[in-house]
Amino acid sequence: MSKKRIMSGMRPTGQLHLGHWLGVLVNWEKLQDEYDCFFMVADWHALTTGFEKTEHLRANTREVLLDWLAVGIDPKRSTLYIQSSLQEIAELTLLLSMMTPVSWLTRNPTVKEQAAELHAAEDAMTSGWLNYPTLMSADILAFKGELVPVGKDQLPHLEISRDMARRFNHLYGEVFPEPKGLLTEESALPGLDGRKMSKSYHNDIKLADTPEATQQKVMTMVTDPGRQRRQDPGYPEVCTVYSYYNAIAPELVPQVAEECRSASIGCVQCKRRLADSLNATLAPIRERREAFAQTPGLLESIVQEGKEKASAVARETMAEVREAMKLNVVTPAFAENPR
Image: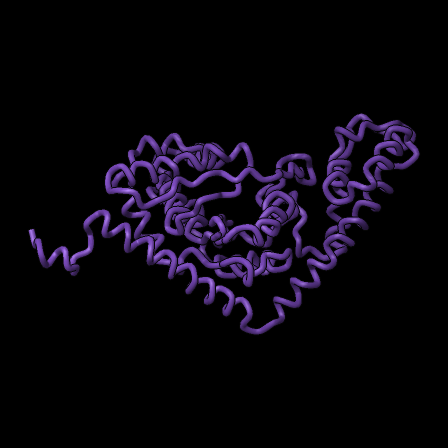
């Protein structure tokens, strides 16, 4: 029995942080043996909000790939590829855009969220940005992706891809499976300041950070605002440091909670212990990352092999799409009925 196919991706915005790892990559790593996984570096998606500045795009793509490899995303068990290397995705995006109502795009959560985050004016919204959901759908449908790993709050983002698959199948015949969300465990790890962890907020801990940088960042974490003095008891539930223990060192959580509530440990000491746990956890990842980075030609060979495998699948899909839409010109059917 063939494995079900999974498709997912990440935009190359630079080195990945703990939120990416615990929120996404840990789940990807677990899925590799059970599913036929296609993982994409979504460099075209990066252009939807960053088309003016592309000087770091290639370097960022490299950083993402190194982080993937370091945490166990294995090119022998998954297909790793760069979005812009597959012209079939661009073609399918164009064809899907012909049949997609603009109202579908403007109500999509991705477009709404980005507009709110960037406070975009009407004239600042490019057609590529508005068409983001169509490109996302082409990413999935080009591989006939059956499952897309998502958190519960991301399910609405997937609905437009299902809508497009249904509409295409209704108009031209059954070609695409309707992709379904594969609910995965979510990590709500906050940033150093308690907000959502984000590179743009400068509140993240990167997988590639040095032990020294990691310790410095941990020491800046916000703690229980009500604990003003060392001898004051604390409330770990409102402390950012405590949430990291839950994610990184759950075996220490009961001890940390008791010590915080009884004021038998201070926040500085608690942070130092967390930094030690973090560095111990990240040490093998950093070691593997450095080894991959120092291997000449490794990334190039991985993405070339991934491109060839992904392109072969996408070409088959696009042949079906063109046939369904009667776009193939030089075919026996055309010769028999040129009209």
